[in-house]
Amino acid sequence: MLEFPRWKVTWLWALTLLASLAALPSIMSAAGYSWPAGWPEPKVNLGLDLAGGSHILLEADPTQVRQQRIEAMEESVRNKLRTANPAVRVSDISIRDGALTFLVDDVTKVDTVREAVLPLTSGAGLTGRRDWDINVIDGNRFLLKPTQEGVDQAVTQAMDTAVEVVRKRIDALGTKEPTIIRSGANRIVVQVPGLQDPQALKNLLGQTAKLEFKLVDQSADPSAVAQGIAPPGSEIVPFAQTTPGMTAKSAPKIAVKRLGGIRGDQLTNAQQTNNPQTNQATVTITFNTEGGAKFAKLTTANVGKPFAIILDGKVLSAPSINEPILGGSAVISGSFTAESANQLAISLRSGALPVDLKVVEERTVGPDLGADSIRKGMIAMGVGTLALAVFILVTYGRFGVYACFALVFNVLMILGIMGIIGTTLTLPGIAGFVLTIGAAVDANVLINERIREERHRGRRVMQAVEMGYKEASRAIFDANITNIIAATLMFAFGSGPVKGFAVVLMIGIATSVFTAVTMTRMWVAQWLRRTRPADINL
Image (cartoon, rainbow, N blue to C red; front, side, top):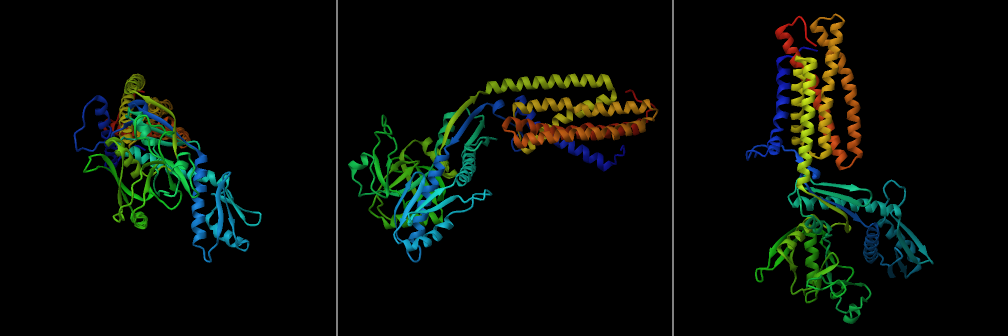
């Protein structure tokens, strides 16, 4: 137990000093000093409650996901039956009461249609149900209705995608360590430390960025369109509100073909640019190979016809196709400012949100409040550390000195490891810090008291120290394993602040056992072999 060969001493000191040196960037930053440029900077990031920033709670509407699934199924059914061999004629395809219905003209083809439509459905996870119910009414009317299990699965997939899209958009702002987590079935919590402009964040996250290119229905009656009446197979879409005083009700409307357009989910890039003639802000988009081919096909087949550029259900512009666009890129123009064009470019690059997100809660934490929390947390940590050091020095003498050194290295190693792995420190994390410092001396108390007992039993110094570390280590490891289990459960099932506390607690437990048991034992062993004392003052 007290044998420490040179290689082991070197390895333990190297590990301790490396982790401790990694804490220097964080300490210098807290003290107001700058870290040399070009040097590695494993710095601890401060959370929202310490650095200030914006907190937003976003909510999605599950009914929108259901509607999207029905519309997608309608297009899939049309394409499937159009390309069937032999061809199948259907009519009266419509969406009614949350279901898709259509008539099969030839009753003898009902089974053929069912076989064609069935592959468009799939199992809903592990529920044992399919994501669509297919029923035949009156002999030849199909009724396709999404099951609740299928909708729940679609909502989960949509929210998972939305989290990644939100993360990409926030990363594009250059912020560090944002917290983006699911909350319940249809909510997302977004916390961005250091961002003091919640409105810009709301504008960025509230934009679905669903881009579509659809042909304008030139057969539509303008007076009917103004009243919101669209021809069969078309839909009414309003223009974006671009002039002062324009409202959603007074904005002009246009009829576009509901199916057959191109979606913007095949973009590879989007950049804010300027029109070289008017210097107006625009957005240049680039399609991937498949999207570019579709765009070229659409523009080639419809030269001279107008098509609408639609963003989030609003028409940005409806230019005529003067010539085929074959380069796989296009320019979106509108009443953009440089900032709004850049935000749109970020949204398009990050991908469209699969479902609209509505802000249901927002709050801003000022940096002054965070600075006050840090100051009070540091005071609590300093007072606690000083009180522990005084107590342990008075109680255990030289062994107390070793325990104090272990305590200092413990704090430095926690900060260093948090900086290396990029952990965010929150106010509950500071509480975990203080708790770790208090618990760090428990191991030394157990060891020192056990050494006292062994001396009182008449064991010699070397034997008493060896037995003290050996016997106390069992209780120390048992106690800390239960703490690790509790911290792991808090991290697995807790949310932001609870996770911050759990992370600091887990790191602190590991470093405190290392410093309080391994390092102090090495120091005590070296002292005993160097001085060979006849007695120890404990």
